[in-house]
Image 1: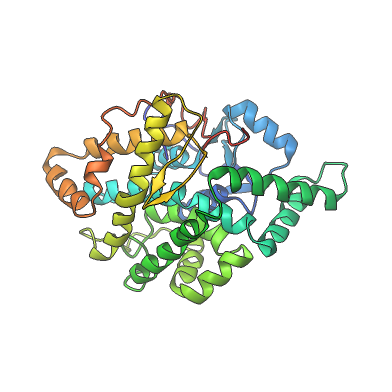
Image 2: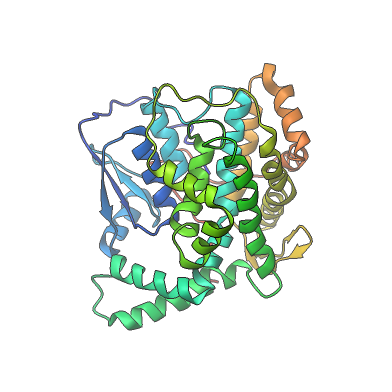
Length: 375
């Protein structure tokens, strides 16, 4: 999650010139950005990343991450949330953020929650289960590592070992936390199934920023990876239908967002208040103490040796800033909504998270790294 506050000046963008979207068809965040561009009708060419292109993106943006965008004028961008904020400033006639200030804040809060909190279960279901692990290692090698003079069988084995170690075991997934990690996905499906039985999207009959944040994990991971996809199709067919609907959605002027916060979102917002915001606070305190790893407890479950994330300290800063930016006339309504979900107190538990994250040039110079989990 991010907010490119200093880079939102309106710049002429020629709609006839296509941008280039660099990524992989299996990528968590690439799918989110693809769906957004498709929905807005922003013409683009998809460019499959290889190692050489990845190095070029790091040179241009300051970070080796996907997706990245190259504008027709040669500038590069990275980190999907500030990229979307920038495109919203350039294409204001097709917004994905509701006009209502409280709903707008909830769209930002849910985007951040879904894409950051579902990261661990998405990686777990992809790499902890053999059918998914075998399938994805093949896709990564076939799509990304085409220029390596090493037998594919060896590269696939290396990928499986690397991903399972780096993104699962070194992110706190163990026999003690396994069930809790999976419960995040399963409970989210249950809550979403109820919401999506009432309307087509989270905040109305058209997608919002919250939907695109949720789409990151639900599209390229949970709906496509063999193990997680079986669960979704059987237990939450409405969610499976939603992700296909969003992929095919195009902006139109007749669809509407809700006029008020719906009660069926409260179980999800209570998850935010009970689990995600306390985690952000624990992570921020560990960052302030200059720790590289910490041992957070979530809903009574002890995680051990979890990487500290500077970026997620910044996520907390940004959520606080956005909440304070809600107009005074709407502040009571926002506070009442967040208090009813037990989100208000943990949101402002830390007065100054102090991430030290430089957001002055976003999205043109980025640095989104969840953590250095190679240690």
